[in-house]
Amino acid sequence: MVCPNCNAEIGRFELGVHCKNCGVNLYFASQEKLLSDDAKKCELEFASMRAFTAKLKAAFIGSAPAIARIVFTVLCIAVLLIPFGSLKANLPLYDAKVSFDGLGLYNAYSSGWLLLLPDYLKVGVTHDIALKSIMLIGAVVLLALTAVAMLLAEILSFINIRKGARGMCTISVIGVIFSVLCVVFSVMISSAAKDFTVLNVKASMGFGGFVSAAMYIGMFIINRVFISRNIEPKVKEVDLQRIAVNKKLKAGEITLDELPLPVFESEEEKEERLEHEREVAEIEEKEKAKSKSVKSNAEGNKNG
Image (cartoon, rainbow, N blue to C red; front, side):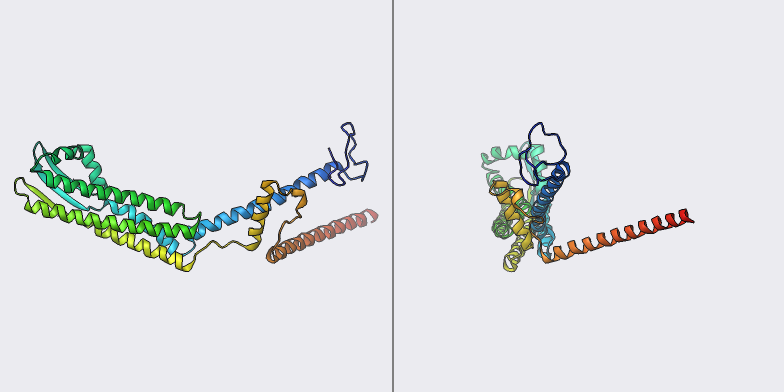
């Protein structure tokens, strides 16, 4: 063990309260050093937390484009519930009634209709309808995966706001492409149903593809605004310095003993600290004056 004040060696069997070299109270000096180290750690760690909070704010709620991007991300997922087309047919061994949207495809899978599509491909009469249905289903599934990718990109955008916006622009273009494919395949099914006279088949287009394309175009525009405005987290320069020092501290390049307290201090923080110290000093002066007044009154009563 060493003295926290003069770094003199203290023997294992030296049980005195004071250091024999400098005379400091070892208990209070040790407590003071621990409190000082904790204060330095808190200053550095809170700077990292403030920087992280600034990233979250800039990415999600710090501006109108950030809020609009969250809304459009939710809409890109919600649009999957709008029908991209529908099909109603009296097929051999089964009456099909399918809505080509997220919920409708789930019901089609639960009822077993999707599992029958490969069999209908092998039948010459139903081959064309089955093939175009598979194409539309594939486009809807790819669009759903694009919506999931957009959601993940939105959640992780705070890591690097600029790169995140660029990535979401790319995903938006992919979403528009798949939306257009959904419209094209829906038109193809509708056209094939009109020419299909062997069985009672009815098909109609849905508005899901148009709405989805509009949502992804809107998302593309919003992210382009992000890039053009160069929206970045607002972190104080003094906090950036604290973060750099904290990295060196964790890497073992420096120790807490080498750092002053406070480690860094802006002019605003210095004014706040001095103001707080003045308030504390005023309170202490008032308490001392009150104590003296009570003491003098007590002595006066005693003498009287």
